[in-house]
Length: 109
Image (cartoon, rainbow, N blue to C red; front, side, top):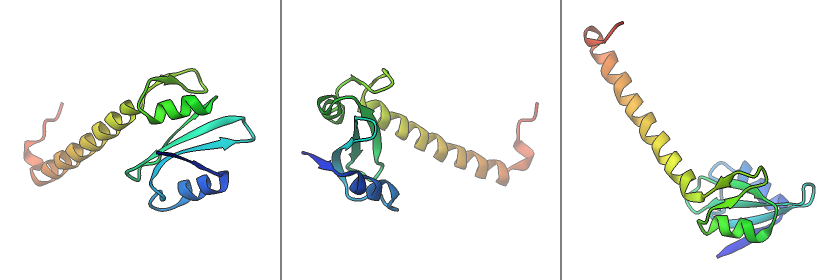
């Protein structure tokens, strides 16, 4: 279910330490005339701006849509990118610990 937020509620969510409340939200920005979709079931708070409520809802449903910049985007690419970055950061930390523990085995150019 997609809920609507006011701009004050949206700012509270974005400014909170743990991005709460959790859920799927749409906010109407009176200044720009755009709709902000917030995908936050897991506390990551992915956001995108769209020209219509319907497009924002479609993005939250996982469909390919165009944002206000005209880019063709899909929510699943955000989750994939996040998981890849998280995995790479973990692998990098493991490699740094190994290199610190084995300074004589580093590959130097």
